[in-house]
Image 1 (cartoon, rainbow, N blue to C red):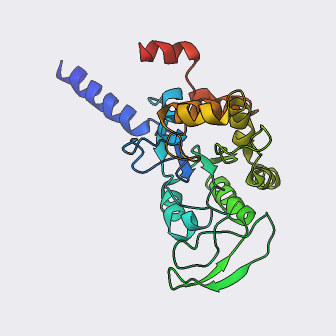
Image 2: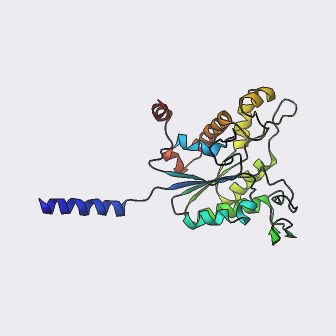
Image 3: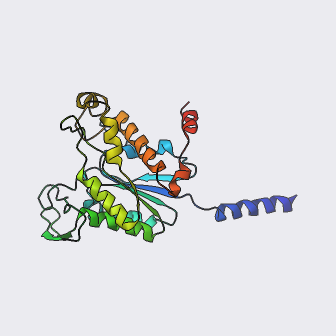
Length: 264
């Protein structure tokens, strides 16, 4: 009897130590991905706070590291990416969505978060008026390629998403964001997966009107969604992911029936 118990304990310990750790989905971006604490305390939600509803979290761990006000540049210069890189491992995934804040000033005393427009190799050398540090500023595409390449170097999978659109209209349509083009180029040149979230969500928004969207999804401003808007955007992210050929993250998605069953 004692031998049987001892063998069982040894077997359990052996399984515990040989079991593969769950892969992690890391999400990086701005306030449209995670607003504030990510719990909707101000009535504003980012899609990253609701994406877990579509995944089997018993098989994949999800960490939303997006933070309001950051651009592709400042998420890097503040050391936020470095902290993720330390833990990033083979088999993990990184979803990245930047662009909303990249069009700001490159050097000022309030935010200094802008990147050079486009995907080129040009640089701008500055003495940062906000951080008081010397800095070489790169293009949006340069920062995106850095995230992608360093993700791949770790054996993880990079998934680039273009920025979700704002509730801004022109001639009855939502203008497509220029950063969507640069995000696509960054993904293409590095061999990363790409979801044109800008186009997918804009097409859904255009089934409505600017005034109705304000009531339904954007009651506070034209950029940040409420819970319903974030829920729509999260579902759209998943729709886009499902179209990606050979992207291994799809095996962790819940089916529609599984989601309905869990929500009962």
